[in-house]
Figure 1 (cartoon, rainbow, N blue to C red):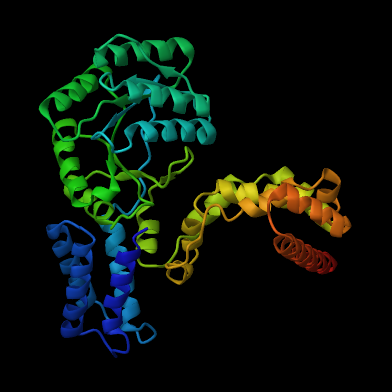
Figure 2: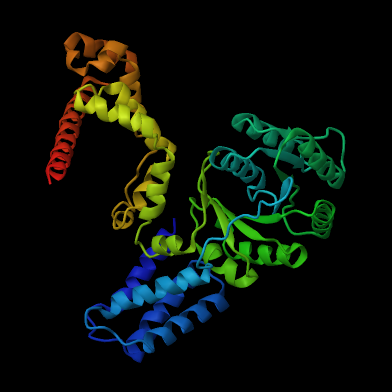
Length: 440
């Protein structure tokens, strides 16, 4: 995410490295490079110019503390301005209403239908709501089938009317259906086109007038760069939408849309799509995104992702097993599944400050756990609970069952034994500290 932009900005700040103070000359040189980096990332030209002018004014008007190096001060100013450009604070969805109505808009291929499923899944699993998905793309049967498939995967009902080609009527009937069936949120997936056209705009404007949605979201493919901003403006002029959703932000995106879109349409980015899975949705936090663009990581989001998978009761059971030296491969397997649920491995690693740059050229395969899982699944329940019994004949059987070679199995067993020792050491140290604090 934003790797090229991060690299270019880092190179720009090196101009100030070793300088004793900020001057008009070295600031101008640095910001010329910053502006080029933003333009290469497909940031709107006016936005890039306004941004660098603002940074220049703040840099030259600020007294440099002796403890702060000029390049570090410049990074801070750029960070704060980037966050401000993207909205500074996160903006929540407006979900008031009985039911609350969320209307999706955007071009064909932007990811509206998939995002509708992701949003329904998030509202159901994390907020305890009861969403209803509504298929109002009457022109593409595949879109209706896709929404049905997504709904069945997350166990969310999908409202459709076979043979009805009136999307306004379908939307109105869906809200009546939601009221009767206890659905407190209605998410309406609308038709898109390959380009903005009058028929599409009139249709979605009519749906808006008929159902009075609490929230209109404009969904846009982040990989389209500056075109995304132009399309957002066209939709906003007609719909006056409430927020933006950037999809495919995990792809080969230069970042221009994320940085420019707020300043052009003056509407907040509310969510980003970061993968194909139905839980691959992130709330958009401008300050955290600025951290990531400048290579500072995003440790807060990483902790939140970990907390989502954290089960207090399971953690207690695990702690007892470690204390009794009963931590086995079954427990290890469960931990792997929790890590996988957190998302793309390379994206997770890049949230750790300083790691993003180090792993830029490293290929971290999301299938990295497949071999380990195959080995564990080829063990008997007794072997998983008692790894110490794994002798030569048992390992030979696991080789046949898992399709992995004996070296991989030996390496996994050795690493597992080292991990067991480390866990016992960490826990015993924690216990000793707790005992000392009680004595005090």
